[in-house]
Structures are given as structure tokens and as C-alpha cells.
Amino acid sequence: MIFRHFWAVCAAFALTSCATAQRPLVSATPASAAAVQPFVIAANPLAARAGMDVLERGGSAADAALAIQAMLSLVEPQSSGVGGGAFLNYFDAASGKITIYDGRETAPAQASRTMFLDAAGRPLNFGEAVVSGRATGVPGAVAALALLHREHGKLPWHGLFGAGIATADEGFIVSPRLGRFLQGRFPELSTPDVQRYFSRADGTRLQAGDRLKNPAYAAFLRRLAKGGVDVLYRGSTAAKIVQRSREAPLGGSMTMADLAAYRPIKREAVCAPYRAYRVCAPPPPSSGAAVLELLGLLERTDIAARGPSDPQAWYLFAEASRLMYADRDAFFGDPDFVKVPVTGLLDPAYLDRRAALIGPKAAAQVAPGQPAEAPLAMVDLTREPAGTSHFIVRDAQGNVLSITTTVESIFGTGRMVDGFFLNNQLTDFAFNPLQPDGHLAPNAVEPGKRPRSSMTPLILLDADGHFVGAIGSAGGTAILGYVGKSLVAALDWGLPMQEALAQPNLIARGNYPQGEVDKFDPAVLAGLAERGIVLRPGQGEDSGVHGVLIRDGKVDGGYDPRREGVVLVGGR
Image 1 (cartoon, rainbow, N blue to C red):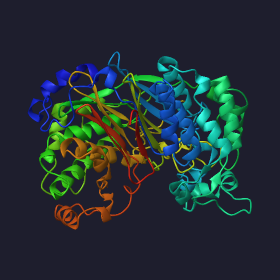
Image 2: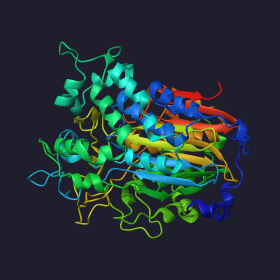
Image 3: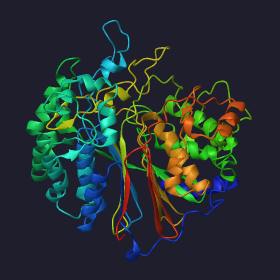
Image 4: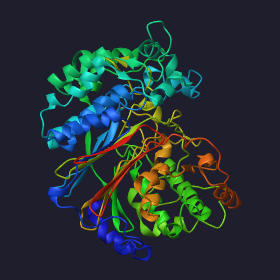
């Protein structure tokens, strides 16, 4: 069900009100071109300001994205950076076309299926694997942004890194969130590079409020600005990436040839209806289609007639989430290596059958379904830590970029090159390549393969193809739940975007639903328990959702209050 099939699908969805929303909360009439307000929503004020400065100089969304990513790599290194990967969802206002730029990392050509097994054939300890050289994939974020800039940039490449360079030279104040991570208990904090970079002159650990300079990163950005994207993928920086990732413990197999051969992939968006809107997401290896499945399941319930104080609404969300996660975990992987039954998962008849499984009380077990063209359902063998960042940009011409970007776990592998951290994205593969029955796991490591991702930057269109919203989040496997909850709160319950993002998180994957127990009304928790959903603290505590809707021609943007984001709107 890709974009061009939307109205054919809507006809099949007639019983679930695809063509007309129960509440037309988003304006279906776009503002005139002269009235388009540029905006930037990002997880750090310095990054958002860098992007807005580019827009105010006449730059495009593609231009601003490079400035934002360059700054995030400096001020939010625990989440994303130039050494990581990204999925870019781009809306071209002139043509109305949506294009996905897949900047997901790839496994080196010499990677093996058993690279995350020990000598006895057992999966490595996760804390050991995430700081290993084997964890680093060939980075793709900068290559994807460079391709986007070549196709949609307005300002010259060399002029987009000034804010990052100046801030790295002059230093920035360690934010409370970065300071909190520096005092945490993460494997990466024990690595020599992390200890060296985040230490004061007296050897003590930096804290929130301290100033941090990064002259090595400033020098790298200067070379990147002058020499272009090849500065990262060839030459001295590439050689350092190879050397650093191949060092003990558990050195990897990356080569200069792997870096030079990396190419981002342009993909066609997967789109499906929700209420009156088209929701467009990246295809696999992203999990965007899984979020679309979740929305399709929810549309077959009465969740929109309820609200955030109703336990039944949260129960429906939890059970639909469990069904979606069971399918995502069983079938999703790199489409160049495994068949992902996206069409079958979004087929109206299949959604009908899955939604019918939501009974009055929580199911004891939830198994994957049997969508059309699905391979044998597999047991998921993947762990996915919760790092990552999301940002959204719209320029004065109405072009929009929704991008989720990551170095994977906190500070990636904890190994640095030229002032930035290397990703540990390959730990998103299944450590054990074989299922209990001997079949190859769909998310097993293979040379050149892209690991499955939960990143799912979305763009929403109205029936006429006009942009009406965008959303995405950080948070590992919980991203799907964060985004789904926020869309329900904003579209179905009519909450302002900021209030929608602040709603409690509930992540129901498998048999142990987790979430922000302290933020739910006790009556909601009691109602969930009566229905068999006993919510426990855990994943769901640190989302990073950013979203925007165009309501009556005005920008209704929000940032996740659990982080340090900001919404900047031009003309204000």
C-alpha cells in the first residue's frame, strides 16, 4: 500500500471511516505559499537555533538539516552524530512527492553471522558487545544528508557548518540531560575515550553547567565543509574510523573499501490511511510499516471516542501494540535480504482479523499473524537500546524533512574519531543468527546488510496531498509506541501537540507492558489491571517525540518534555 494506492485502499477501509475523520482536527486547507511559516523542532536549543539561522539566510530544509545534525553531534553526543545513521522522510512542496533517504548503517563486507557469539557459540554479553569494535557499522547519516542536499539544497555546502564549528571551538554548557548521562551506569562510560573527553583538568567527571570544548570536532567540520562528504568516507578520517573500530577488545572488520563503497538508498514511502489523512513512513529496514499497522488496528476500535482519562482507551492501545509488535518482531529486516510482507500486514482484511483478537481482557499470549506473502514467522532474537534523536524542519517554500538519527546506544561504542563518537548500530542485529529450529533469523548479521530499525519518521498529508503534519521519536523499540500514542492523543483526542506528547507513555511489547506508572491517573492504572494489563516501570521513561500539525493554517508544534527540545517558528 504505497502512496499511489491510497484512495484504492481508502475504499477498502470504508467501514473504518478512512475518507472522513471522526474529528477533522487538522486543517485540510493549507496556508498560501506566502504565509508558510518555516519551523524547526529539535531536541536541543543550540541545534534548533543552528537550523533556524540557516532558514533565515534563505536556506532550504535540506540545508538546515546539515547544520542541525552537525550541532547535535556536538551537544547531544549520547544520541546521534556524524558517526551514525538516519532515516530521512522528505516532502517536496512543489511536486507533492515524498522520498525516503535510507542512511542506515551497513555491516562490513567481512562481517560474519557469528560475530556476536563467543568461542563457545553463546551470544556475547550485551554490555561487552556495545563497546566492541564489531558493533560499528559503516555510518550513513552524513551520506544521506549529502544526497538530500545535492537534490534539494539551496545554499552552498561549505556555509552550513559555521554554528557547529564556532560552538565546538568556543565550547558549550553541558546540559542537565547530558550531565545526567555522564553520571549514569552505561558500559560506554568506562571506555578510555569517554573518560578522557568528559574529564575536567583535575580528572573528575564533567557535570551539568560545565563548559566543554571540542577542537578536534571543529577541525573535522572545517575539513568537511571544505572537502565535502568524502572527508568522512575517504582519507584520514576514514582511516581513523577503520583503525579505531578494529582495535581490541573485539575488533571489527571494517575496511577503507567499506567506507568508500557506502551509498544511501532512495526508497518509496509506505503510506496508509488514518482517519482523513495519509500517514507516510520509511519502508523496511525501518519499522514505519509497523506503526501504520498499529494505526490500522486502532482505527478498528472506538479509541477515538474515548480519551486519556478512560482506562479502556489505554487498554485498546496496549492490546493493539502487542499485536503490532508481535508482527514487527517476526517479519522485519533488510528487504534486500529477507521478504517483509508489508502489503499483507496493511491489508484491510488482515487488519480486520488481527483487530478481532482484541477482547475484553488482555490475551495471555500474543503470536504473530499470517499476513499474505509472509515467510515463516520467527522468534525475535534482537535487543535494541534506546538512544537516538528526532527533528523536523520546514522551509519557506513548504518543503519538510522529518528525520530520525542515531549512534544507537548511549555515546555509541564510546570510541571517538576526530571529536565524534562511532556508532554501535550492528548490535541491532540478532546476536544469535539461527532460530531454535535452525532457520536463519530475519535480522541475522550478513555482509552489507542493514540492521532492522525502529526509527520511523512520519509525514502526514491530507486527501489532496498537502502537508499537514510530521512526527517521530527516539527510544529504541519503544519508538513505535511513543509515536502511536502521540498520534492518537493529537488526532483522535484533539489535544494540542505539546499536551499530546506529554501524555504518559505505555509500551506493550510481549507479556510485560511497561511505561510511566507515576504519570498515569491511579484510576487508569486500576482499570488497566482489571483488564489484565499490569503496568510496570521500565522502557517508556525517556521518549524523545517531536511532532507538528498544521491546524487552521497555524503551526502546532511540540517537543517531548522529557528532553530538552524546543520549537522555533519563523516570523514570531
